[in-house]
Image 1 (tube, rainbow, N blue to C red):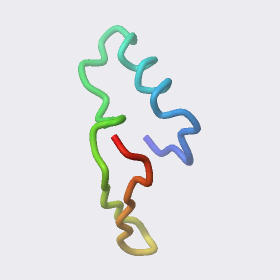
Image 2: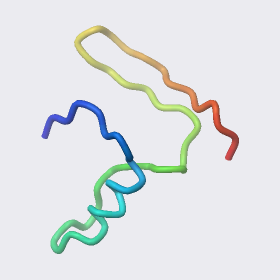
Image 3: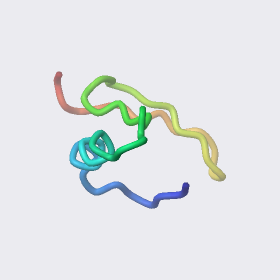
Image 4: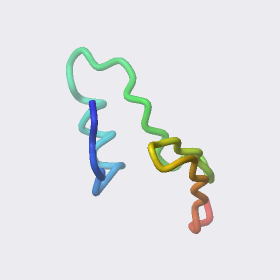
Amino acid sequence: LALDVIEDPIAFGQELDHVVGVVEHGLFNQMVDKVIVAGRDGVQILTSTKAR
């Protein structure tokens, strides 16, 4: 599954939570401050600017 940008990841995660048959979706909304993303252009470390 390839997605460009998830405009509202919280709403998207909530939608997936209500899909019959979906056990987990792998979205960690409001759970982490930093993510590491690897792609064709290399590795990026993204850090949240919002305080939890």
